[in-house]
Length: 150
Image (cartoon, rainbow, N blue to C red; front, side, top):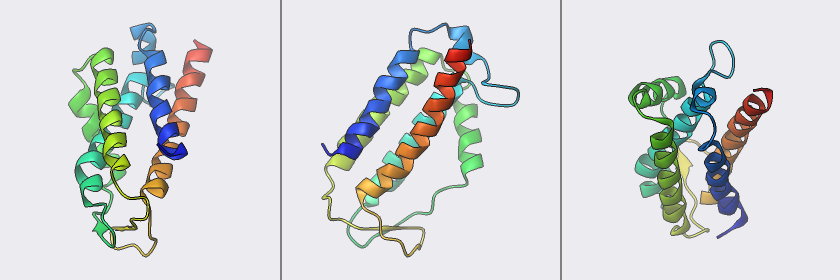
């Protein structure tokens, strides 16, 4: 497994650390009008699910992958669909989906290049994953700061 996918997998370990924390803390918004840790993990899961179903199957050399959906709409959909799930269920969904996403991406030749939504920039699976690694890092920092301040 390359370094980028290894880092992508490490987010699983980070999320596992939140599993045994006080559920009340995990469900409390980071601040007024912000998501909770529970919702952030659900948000990460939902993007992984989208990528697994809508992007990875089309990562073939020369392909133009679908445009990313409207971020706000997908995020609202994730929060709405996961509102009745427990913290444990959401963590489990995230972990299993992230593992499957890594497995599927690992099967794609590293020399494959594709574009997204008619764009000109050619991406590899590694550059694609790096987009989401940056996204993970942003949210993990938020979650750690919430726990520290509790």
